Structures are given as C-alpha cells and as structure tokens.
Image 1 (cartoon, one colour):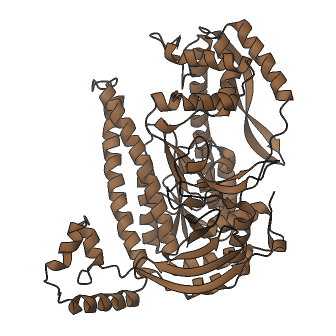
Image 2: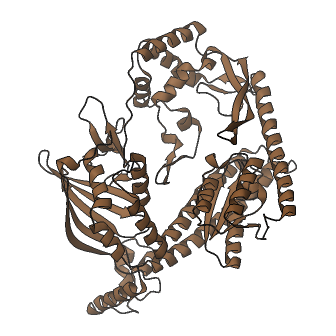
Image 3: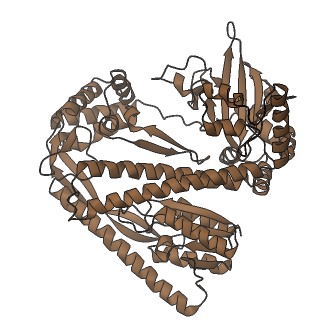
Length: 620
C-alpha cells in the first residue's frame, strides 16, 4: 500500500496544490502497481508536528499498523520544515522497512550519503520556515506598537484611512448597550438572546461572506454554515465585556517559539516574550469598564460549576422533517433528558413535526442493535458486493477532479493578476472578490474529492466488510464512553428520525439507519415509550452487483413490454420528462440504457429489540 502525503501551507504563493500532489502520488501508485491511501493537510504549516497535522498523524498511525509499505510526497518540504519531524519520519520508515518515493523517484533512506543530504535539506527547510514566521511576527509587533490594525478587527471597530483603529458607530451602539445590560445584572447568554431576537447582526453575518466549516470529531463529517446566519452567543458577549480595547487599551502578545523537552521528546511551544499595549479610541468610558469587570467577578462567584454531559449520538442523528441535526439536551434538576431537533431548540422554533426522544433509551437501543443483537451482523454479512457502486463512484470522482482542476487554473490566473506589479490589478476589488470566491470553491470542491476518494475505498467490498468486522469486534463491556462513541460514529453514516403524531401524547418514531460503506437503509419503529424497537424493513436504492443489475433490467423490460412499450417507444420517457427529470436521471431508470442502475426496492422483515429497565445505559 502506497501512502500519498499532500500538504499546502497558508501561503497564497504555494507552488504545489493538493490536486497536483495527489495526481503525482496516484501516478506513482499506478507505476508501482500498488493500492494507495491519500493523507491531506490543507493550509497547515510544515513547522507543526504530527500532533496537530491530522493527515501526517494518520499516516504515522497506519505506518505503525503495517498498512503502509511505500510513501510518496512531491518533495521533502511537504513532510516537514522542522528537523525533529524529519528525524521521526526517517526512524519510522527505517523501523518498518518502508520505501520512500519523493516526486515518484526511489530515495534510499538507509543510504548514509542520502541521509546526510536529506538532513541538510531538513535544516534548510526549518531555517526557511523560521525566517518567514519571524518576519510575520515582527511585522505584526511593529503594527501593534504603532496602534495599527492587522487581521480581523474587534466588533465596534473598523480600519481607518492610515490603517489605524476607527470606531464603527453602528456597532459601537450595541457594544455600549452590552455593557449597560451587564451592569444591570443581565448575563451574557441573556444579552445574546436579546440581540438575536431583535435581529442585530453579528460581525460575521454583517461583514463576511462565505461559509464556516465544522468537522465532527468522531465522524469526520464536514458541515458548512453560512456566515450570514451566525447568531450571537454568550461566550462572544463575555469576551467583548472583558476586552480592554473597549476602554481604549489594545493588548497584543508577541510570542516566540521555544523547544522544550517533554517526556524525552523535543516539543515546540509558543511562549510570550512581550506584552505590547497601545492606545486606541475608546467606546466605553474606563470607569464604566472597571465597574462592569467588578460586577462580572461578583456574578461569577454566584454561578455554580457548569455541568458537562456525554452525548453518544451527537452529530449522527438528523431530523427527517427539516434535515437539521438532533442535539442532546440534559438539564440538572429538570426532566429534560432528550435528543431534540435543532429546529425546536431556542431561538429556533420552526420544526413543528419532530419530537424529542429519550437520550438513555436511544443510546441503549443503538448499542444493543450494533453489538449485542446478532441480527445486524448476519444482515451485513449477507449483503451483496458493491462493484457497480465502485464504478459509479470512480466516474463521479473523475468528473469532480476535472472541475477542481479548472477551478485551480482560474485561481492561479487570478493570483498572477494580483501579485504581478505590472498587471494593474493588484488593488482591483473585482479581481480580489473573484479570487476569494474561487478560493472558497476550490476548498469546497477539494473536500468533495477527498470524500469521494474515501467513499471509493469504502465501496471496495473486501475493505468494507473487514472494516465493519473489526469495528464490531472492538466493543466490549469494559469499553469507555469515548471508545464506544468512536466505534459507533465509524460504523454509522446517519440516523434519521421521523415522528408521526397521534392523539394526546401518543405517537410513533420511525428510525432510518444507514451504515458506512453500504447502500442499504434499515428502518426501525417504536412508540413514544421507546422500549420496544421493531425492525420493519431494509431498503436499497439500486442494484449492487452485475447479477442484480441484469435481474432488475429483465424485470423492468418485462413490465414495460406488458404495457406495450419497447426500446423505440417515445412514450417511455414522456411521463418522466413531464415530472421534471433530467435525461441522465431518465437514463438511469431506463432498462434499455447503458446507464441503467437497477430498481429501487424495499423488503419488509420483522425483528424485535426490547429494552429492559436494568439494561438502560446512562453515560451521565
């Protein structure tokens, strides 16, 4: 197995894109006749070690598990700009007898001469990174001493003509109100709710376009949130109330790198070497600011320790009715102990069909369904192979890569216009805006490509089945909460909850569960007591094997023939086109087409998982 490591830094002038690094790695894999896994760190400095570089960390993990026999990167600087990381990388490769292919050419790490030159290159890379970092830090320190702005300005301030801090009057009004409300004894979270109810825009929603990316810690699933929809939160208000800039004092910490020996390993940390202060226009009178701080201190003493709760399924459960996530809500001293649709969580109240479900019972059901009941494992083992799905994903991946390449070419052209002093476009706002849009498009498309690559790997039946078997076997009665959560989030793609209301408190929950690497969706039904869970059906979207595809094709042809339709009959697509389907969608449904994907089927089955009182698990 070839491990392909790709990395870009935050440097806009980066000469290597993730795409051309990925392409070089795949070409190397083909030439070597090896399967491959791609590891990506996008927008991360090479000076950071594996503890904060997810891609590099995953590569090292797989090296230790003996999954990797060869490693490709486009050049050594992708692996490191720090000698410690390089030494660690070389040691891992030599210990596991891994062959190293920088830019596709074999490089013998056990050759003394090669290792000497590589070590020298590592020193050069580290020096280059340190010089660049130091220049940026010194430039920021100089700006701080001069009272100049850099980076995102605090709420209530904007950049003046000479790059100085200038009060943004429309925002300053709300800052003054926050301080007044706080002095009146109103808490930060209540202030946030007041501003949200009145529709006061945050800095993000007012000034920034694009989306914020959030990655689920366990599933790795990435969700995007429009910056225009970002609301006020209590912790943001609290930070504003404590920031000295509002009384006219801007503080900036100048940090330097320091190497410390921790547990016998050199670790780079940031240490404060200088606190730089400068005067800026104040929004809040210093005396009022001091009174608010004293009041915050008194309020803090009266607030008990915030309760921390464990939510096993956060990030997996979705609402069938509004497509929002369900989130765990538990309150000390109250009966609130449920997963609840975000469309019903304050300040949202626009999902009137969903209903919350007991946390402990849903957690227990999922654990019993996955690890204790034997029905699931038997069902997954009986599922057909997914070769046709693998082929479809490969086609889709190639299409998305082609789009990504076009975006990158346009972006490179935009960068050349911006950085070329003679082009006359350096300060052109239209060009700047287009570059920003293309950059966001590239980021989103790169993540689509990465996700498809992962799905392609999961679609390989042998890998999918062995992975599922391994994860199911990892669960034991001694497993910790974090272990159980990791395993469940690795097995399940999503859980969708649909609620059918009946008279009074009665009602029925329908749960649709999809597993990673499988097309099938399994449906369970329970009432509002959630003690008895009935496995009622399994579903597939289309054929999974060539045999299934041919069986479905013959069946659909026979049905069409029964209604007097054949290959040349134009009526075959007439009704579908009236329904607004595209030609491609019609072709996938047409048994006479080479793009035909098989029939959508639902099979009804019956099985019962019953929760007894003594079995209910409470992780809190």
